[in-house]
Length: 225
Image (tube, rainbow, N blue to C red; front, top):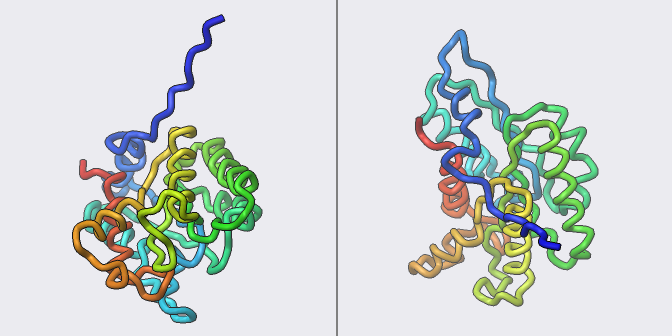
């Protein structure tokens, strides 16, 4: 018996958020508040050199600033539900209450750094659960691969961090959701001559320059009309 192969594809940047972008272009009194939720660990929470927090330099705040410039008539709220030190298994348990209850248009999920060393099956189940819950409510999902870590071998596919990046890419493919490949952006910057430590506040937390790499990739999902 012939079985049609499963077609895997990450969502298309050009149109995945077309309905959201349309709403962002509406002018008062026809516009509405657009809610974006950034879920995850210490990086979206804005941790710099622990315990210092620089939320204004983190990608959720940078995203709001840049979207407000791109869509000057839009009312945009970017909510951060991230908790420092948390992993995806913990984050999944509060996903419905902390994220879905806000009825966002878009959710970003960023747990790659802290999922290292955990049971791979449990981690996959947690990510899949969050993706499925969001999709069931018509919420668009963007997965983020991990940002850089000075303790990792960034160019070794056997290192736990590149493995997490690969697993997250696979989840985006399997679910047809958005993907921001932060890890690839850091790799590209390093290959271009940028020292990793110049992108970091501490060993595992990016500074503003590192966060700007992430937000540049996020903005590609909100194309100018």
